[in-house]
Each structure stands twice: as structure tokens, then as C-alpha cells.
Image 1: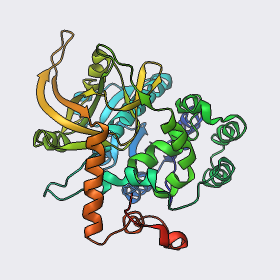
Image 2: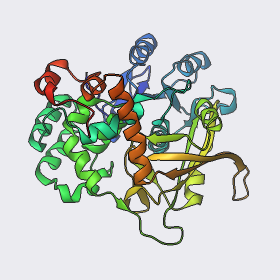
Image 3: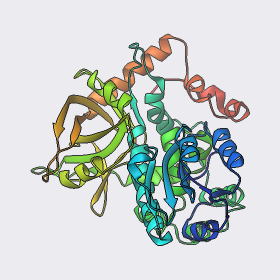
Image 4: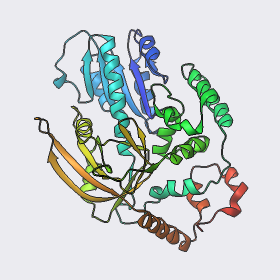
Length: 397
């Protein structure tokens, strides 16, 4: 089943069922609201396997209930609306804050959504090898998906028809679908990446599908992604023009994996990575205060000389699945008078020759093993659609 949305879900638990209309009116995506605790917990538990991060907004300050929410794997943050004062340091670590005014809570909610989105982009990292040294076949997914289309290209009109079905019960999204239908031009694709003015289709379909390799959604938005990749160009040559930064927080397990890498190891983000030329801004994103445990501040220092990029104001968007060599991993303190422990990961984008050698080597190994693109991409695409063009599937490039 196709997964729509940003990859983040807002769930409300309010025993008086009063705040749902206010928050729902402020959101583009639909939210889930509960006033029975067990129903709320059951819903979150039943949806833990759909690759979404859950943000809980609640009016309770009951420590037992908050601890229950804390223990749910998909819960990333808990925000509390309450006039009662509590020492937040005595509450579960996923509690972001207690707010006496709904406006302050909404402001904090949108800030945490932006923060978690960066973390989801960071978490989309794939290493080209498994821990046991074998090929990570998922790492190569976009190199083959982009160059070998095993289904017909879906047109904008077909996407609109499908979107109206996918979002048929979400009235707040329908005007954005209509606007895309009437106004989208491939030459202006970059304008459609601002989630606040144009949440459809990038924010509501493309971004999470990229991170999760959701092939059903990817097939619908393929033309949009290809329009976007056409806008990717080499950065201008000049002092520091190609030095970019990306700051976020990542689980300790991923940071440990980085520290075990060698100078020959390669990674790729499964997204269009939003980087910046400002080390200070990236460092602020990495070191934003959090009470979460087992989370590390990470600053990626990126040499993008061989990467394709696009400018979005102060953001430099790096092309999806760009392969980077991990050249150095260090732990440093931050700057600005406040000391933070930061893991600095230095990345260098592979040049065209080494990228082709990397992919070519993988393809040759697959051919020797008797595998084809059909075998590689059939995992999540309905088999009946694949068989229509089965004769054209091979790893010959």
C-alpha cells in the first residue's frame, strides 16, 4: 500500500477533546485525535511499521501516561498543553516542553516538525556495504531506478487523478492539488519545494517516498523527480564555493557506524539533501537543545566539488543518492561560547569516473550471480506490471 504524507504523524491525546479543531486547522496533513488512552496507544502501536515519526500533542501531565508514550518506538516528541507547572527535567525525555498557550505550542510543534524532517533526511543514509562486508543492494537503488524505467512514465494528469484518490478524505490538501494541476511547469520545479506555500507534491509525496524507497509513490511522481534532477548543476568553481554543511541529530548507532568506517567507505543520502554554506547555521541545527537520549549531534562537512546541486535561497540542494566517500570522522566541541560535543563527518562526493566504477562493479557482480534489473526492482512493484516488459530487463548498460 502506498504511503502518503511527510513521514511524520501528529497524534493528539486530549481527554476533553477540545484542542483537535485548533491544531487541525493549522496543519496541512490530517491528524489523529483520541480522548481514550488505550485507543490512542493502540493506534500508534498498529502503525509503528509504516516508517513514520510520531509527534504526540497532549493535555495530560500524568507521568504514567507520558511514560507510556515515551516507550512507544515511533514516538519522537511529546508536547504538552497545560497551565500547570511541572519540572520538565523530571518528565520523560521525549517531552519537548509544556505550554500554557496554544499559540506557543503550535510554534513549538512546527519547529519540531522541521527538526525531525532534517533528522529523517539524515537517517536516510545508506552505507554501500553491510556490516559483514557484503554489498548493500539498496544503496544502488536510485542509480538503477533513475536510468531504467520498468513502467511507463506517469503524466501530471495521471498523478492528479491518483492524488485525488489518495487524499480524498483530506480536504485541506485538495486546493494544493488543484493549484499544482493548473500551475505546474517543469521549468519552475524548484518553486514547488517550499512546503509552506506548495506542500503538494514534494512535501506530501516525494520526500518520504525517496527516503523509504516507496516504489508505488515513486512511480507516480517520477516525472517530477526527473524535472528536479534536470535542475541539478555543478557548483561554481571558486574558494569555498564547494564546501557545504549539513547539521542534524542522529542515533548513536549510526554515529558508531561512521566511526567504524575506513577512508574507502561510501555512503549516500536517500533524499535531496538540504545543505548550506554556513557552518554556523548547520552547527546550530546539530546542537539544538534536546532531552533525548542516545542521540548525537552530527555535522557533515561536505566537499561537493563533484556533486550536482540546485540553489533554494540559502539552501543548496544536493542531488538525491549522491555517493560520498567518508574521509574523516572526529568528535569536536562546538562554538559560540557554548560547548557541545559534535561528531564531524567529512564527506567528499565521488567524481564521475569513480562513481561509474562503483556502479559498474556492482552491476558486473549481479550479472555474474545471474541477476537482472527485474530481480532487483521487483521487490516492491506488483509483479503483473513487471511482466509486461520483462524481456527488456538486464544489467547491460
